[in-house]
Image (cartoon, rainbow, N blue to C red; front, side, top):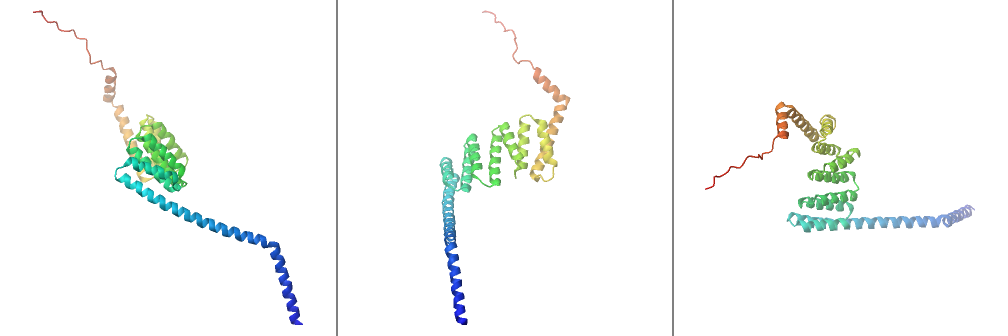
Length: 248
């Protein structure tokens, strides 16, 4: 009797499991397929990314060797070609190296354009802002102070990790373009604000000392007299009568 009851209970459990399997089986099977497919895709993506990174690394090193050997045109062409097919990290690095070559060749506009492209390729803010800051330094060397102020200001307002350096070069551009008081205000902040990088703080103090010395020199009476004389100095050409010669 007990065996019969156990057999009945076992059959009931089987019927219950079969009913659940018929009801939820397709969903469970679908979920298993999705998990397997997703795992396979992730593994393939990982393999492909690794393969692309290795190929990009080899091409990058080949371009670097050309640059080291002094074949700048070929090196730049190889960097630019790599930037079009490499993963974003290598693409950004390649564009930065190509920009460095453009500076060495005297093409500042191209260098800035390439660095702007590098900013787009990078995903990490640190790398983005560093490429943007490099473009600002190039513009400073080119004497394009209005562009320097605009771009450096964007880095300052965007709370960049390079904020101190951006403010420093912004103040230098202001000083070069004759905006002395604005430059003095920025340098004063950098020289005294807590948390400013030590190197930036020291250079800001030196810039303030230079501005103070320049102002003191300009205030001297002798300097004013020299300036006035330079503005009122007569022309070096004089209308002296020509000497006549006696005819022989």
